[in-house]
Structures are given as C-alpha cells and as structure tokens.
Amino acid sequence: MKKLVVTFRKCSNVYDVLNMHLSLMTFLGELFIVGNHRTGSLHVSSKGLGLFVLQLLSLILLAIGGQLAHSLLEETNATYLHYGMSLLITSTGAYAVVVTICNARAGKIIWHILECFDEFDRKMDRLSAPVDHRAQKLTLYHASTVAMLGCVSSNAAFFFAIVLTYSNVILQAIVFVEVSLFVVVVFSSLAQIVMLSFLAYGRFRHLRRFFDIHFLPWQPASSLLRELNKVNLYQRRTHSALFHSVLQMFDDLHRALKLINKVYLVQLVLISSALLPSPTFALYATYRSFVTENYELRYMIATIAVSSLLYLFSFFVLIFISTGISYEVDRLVRQFHMFTNMYHVEFRRFVEESAVCIKTHFLPLHMGPIELNWKLAFSMLGWMVSYLVILIQFDASDVGLPELQSQCNSTD
Image (cartoon, rainbow, N blue to C red):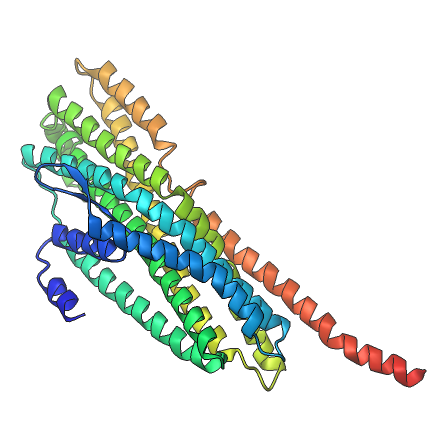
C-alpha cells in the first residue's frame, strides 16, 4: 500500500496515471498482455497470466463451493431473505467469472485504443496544437484516489457485515472472499471504461476547439465587435491539407470509440443487469427494518446498499461522459456544416462529402448495446421500484397468511 501511495505521488502527467492503472490491472490479473510504448510491440506477461488463472479458478471454485456451503452451513432458522441473500452472492460470483474473462479479452484491445489516442496526440503536435493533459491528469488522479478508497472501504464494510451476519467461520470466509473479488472485478471494469471514455471525451473537445479556431470566423458576444466579422471572415480560410488532417484525427477517435464499444459490450450488459438486484434488495430490507423489530440482516443490507450506490454513481459518471462525447461530436458536425455553407472555395464539394460522412458516422457513436443515455438510467430506477413493489406485496401476503389461518382455526 505504501508503494502504491508513492507511485500516486510520482504521477506528473496523464500517462503516469495510465501506467499506474495498467500496472494495477496486471497485479489484479485483469491484464496479462503488456505493450511497449516505444516500439508498440505486445507480449504476454507470465506474472499477469498466472494471476489471471489464479483469480479465475478462485472465482469458479467460490461460485460452486459457495452455493454448497450456503446449503450445508445455513442456519436452521433461515428465512427466505437468507436464501435470497445466498442466491444474490452466488449470482455475483457467476457475474464475476464472466466479467473477468471479458476483462482479460479486452487486455489486447486496450493497447490499440491507447495507440489511437497517441496517434491523435502526435498529429496535434505536428500541427503545433498539443493536447493539454493537465486537467485530465488531475481529474483522473483524484477520481482514481476516490475510487480506490471506495473499493477498500466497501471491502472493509463487507467484512464487518459478514462477520455480524454469519456465525459459521467457514461461511464467513467464503462469502467475504467471493464478495471482495466481485468488488475488485467490477471496480476494474468500470475504471477501465470510465478512464478510456474520459480520454476520448477530452480529445473530442480539443478537436472541436481546434476546428473552431482555425476554420470558423470569430463570433464575439458584443454587438459592436460583430461588425468585425467581415474583416475576420476571410482570415480563417485555410488549405485543404489541414482540413484533411482534422478528418483523419476524427477518424482516429471514432475508431477508438468503436473498439471501446466492441470490447466492453458484455461488461456493460452484465454490470447494468447486476446493479438491479442489489439496490432493490437494499430498499426492501429498509422496508423490513421498519416492520420488524429483530432484523438480522440489517448490517449486511446496509453495506450492500452503500456499495451498490457507489456502483450506480460510477454508472452515472459513465453516462455523463458518454453524453459529453455525443455533445462534442454533434457540435463538431454542426461546425462542419457551418463551414460548408459559409465558404465557396475550390474544395466545397470535398467539405460537403466529408461533413455528410461524419454525420453518418455520428450515429453509432454510443457506449454499449443501446444508447447509453438518461433513458437507460431512468429505466433502471423504474425496474428497481417495480421489483420493490412486488417484494413488498409478496411480504405483505406472506405476513398476513398466518393471521388468516389462526382466524380460520378459531372460528372452527
């Protein structure tokens, strides 16, 4: 831990933060294909591969053995909530196995995505408009610190909750290892997706500003200065080679987004579906704590509620970044059309064809199987409320059944 803190303090730019994340992924067994940033060659790391195999075998054994341990070592007075808890923990183990395999598959593609970003930066350097990574470095640095503290705090909270919930030592150990591995795996997936999407967002924003400065006329906010537009109008005319460079850089970023969408498709589906049971179960347990005086699972449920809210918050951050990318691309497309309609120069047809091409390429720019926007977020909240209502109705009918039977027996 001390070495990790020292590494954090040594981060001077955004690439140091990226290297720290890549080293952490290798340590966790999520990345066993290592790339050389100078030569661009890829090779398999024996240490990373061994950690990946160890983690995968541990998750498979815990997913199978955890279900057997719950069935054999469960308390005699276990309720359907205890059974639901065991099914939830076992399903998280199965989710973790699939996400781990998908993360390992994404290891090779990560280097291609970073190569697209590097190619964009090199082209910007040749145009004397280097990308300023200072804001990105600070944002990633602080976000990484908060995320790692949240991961450690979640594991610590789960440890105390599991000790207070389960009396059997073997069951405590199995449940804690399984839950902690699931927390680490999901944290790693979300960190990868958010980090790569944030890097893409910063470069789209830089490209849009670059095009605005070099191709569009100055548009001052003051009404008096707007008269200078006629003078400034012809100063922004530029040659077609620079415009072609902008199209190439847009294509680099577009290719990076397509790779992100391809690699993390399964992880997004699994994480979005896995987020549904935990908050629903936590809300239901909150309801049970009001109607039941002696509630044994309140500590475990409170921990699940907090951790699931952290995951949900990370998911909303991803939605914000995806929305920001769509916003920047849409503004860039509008600027292309504005440039096309404004100038009657020799490469007008070339500009029009390029703008139409970018407009058509804008359609598949999304993250996940469906457009990752606020509709998905609100639909998730709607599903949670629906499940909560069903569980409360089921609980009310189950609670009222003994009273109805006692009334029937008394009348007989």
